[in-house]
Length: 83
Image 1 (spheres, helix red, strand yellow):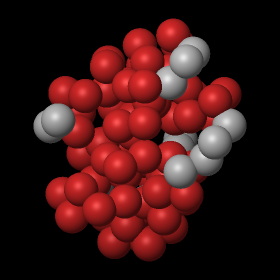
Image 2 (tube, helix red, strand yellow):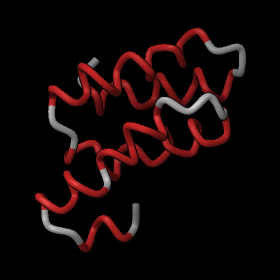
Image 3 (cartoon, helix red, strand yellow):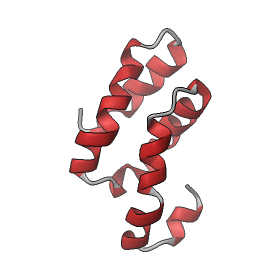
């Protein structure tokens, strides 16, 4: 994510966004929590169509997770995704 700051928007869309989409769908809680914690760093680069079709369906599962940290982080990122 830190290296993504050095990319222009076109490169960011081609290299970073596909990785984010893949990581959001991960079932590993540690990965998901860390990604949720960093969402404010890359949310501006996510296109609405990508959020609606590929990211939001995976994020919403965090509201029902048994782990309270995942639920808390999911609630915290909601404003960044315009939920």
